[in-house]
Image (cartoon, rainbow, N blue to C red; front, side, top):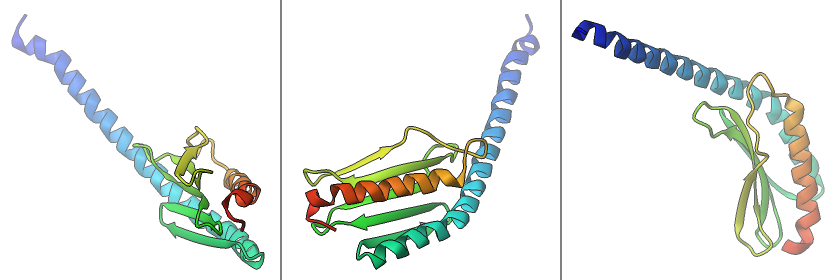
Length: 147
């Protein structure tokens, strides 16, 4: 076998790796662009819930950037319960993370075990997760000195 014959297979593998890298970069950018669109759509929803809670004297902190939004509520003892929508995967898929203060005062974080993109995302997912976060905050308030 000549060296030319030998290098056909490695050349194909190199080309395939380049193509895969280009495709992955495209997917990552597409997902990040889609996340930015989602943030623009759901920010008013989060602002509405924050306004309603503030009327009920619940401390709410809402922070957003182009690629994430965090809705955080504070307990009287300084503990918190929050929901963050952002990207945390290498391909920039959407992930929702809950962060809260555990009963022992330590911070805790969890996801719903899912990641989202254009094929399986609906803005209603965020609304449902936000409402659950608020319900949990109120449920656990007595363990953290109240609201």
